[in-house]
Image 1 (cartoon, one colour):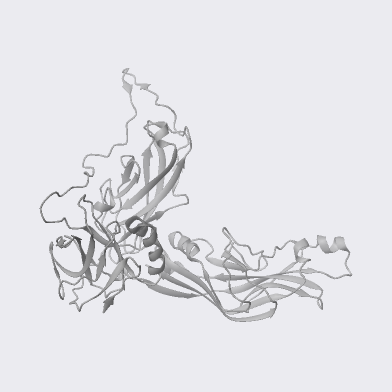
Image 2 (cartoon, helix red, strand yellow; image 1 turned 135 degrees about the vertical axis):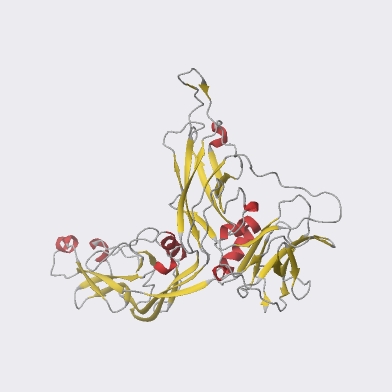
Length: 493
């Protein structure tokens, strides 16, 4: 078995034979996403010291085990990255395996309007921690960008109670037990060990732990099923890098299996991330820090791989795949006014998905064809989608040359004899020859369905021709492609 390194800034190393010690108890594993977009709501009339913004988040348990309730204000924690004291949190109920819970976190308005106005980036962290460094399992976070308008909250207004006492709006200081500043180990030959070894399945976390280059690497690694490890090093000690070992747990004492050779070496101290080939379930990893010939102890906690940490693939068949067709008459027997004023005729076909347009002088009609493919995506609910492709196969074509398929997106709700449109963003990255099989990237659409199942989990594909009569009358050639097989392939965690 070998553990390969995907990004150029990681050094590959062999993975020695190991004795697998499977973890018996299934574990919960949290991810955090927005419950809406954007994932926050401004208070309509806020004042300093009162709630100014409410973050609306959904916590998914993608692990194999149920979680217990976390009756701690820091179970879900949101903080301003530039001003961590502007923060707040929420408790978290128990969540079954593959279940989810919605939470809200409110932050008060700051006394200084200048400190609050403008762009802020917040981090939402799940797992009962005030920071990623304190997270116990799951270790997931979400970056949220917010632009506050000038003068968002009014000036401080003192109010008077019946007893004549002046009430000053409170500031949002963390409750007792807030996180201490990062510790420093000075002098001596030892180095503190890294902490919180974990995995991630989101590019946002890759960016946080490795920067833009790591995010780019993860964009290819996660769909390929790679295991992405991350860890914290909340110390001021200078280091040259980190080493990742295959380990087995024995309380807080971890020993290498098969010798001291690491499976990965990270020589960029600011990058706390490694990308490995997927190992068997039960494989555990620990991380050390090194500077010159000095190496720290292995991290006090290890990360052990469960089935929930590894990528899975689902291939869903369309149910159904159909075609909507609109016809308009181009007959010269009709007056120009009659041709321009006709509503046209809608019809549909069920023999595969056809897209494009046709100019039929024999029938004296022009027609636009739009394809529709519906899928039952309930099996993906609550999962993180690494990559999703709409796969169109077995193409036959007529007319051309040209791109009969040039646009696609999420379909509006549609039944036969209704107009078929794209609901939301229209995607255009079609670079295939007419009639060829094609894979269309639909990852963001499928992720939105997995996060919140929509009423119509379907796609529409078109050639971009408007259904307006005046436009359809201008069609002068035929370009049609029919796909007999339509499937949705998703890689998910």
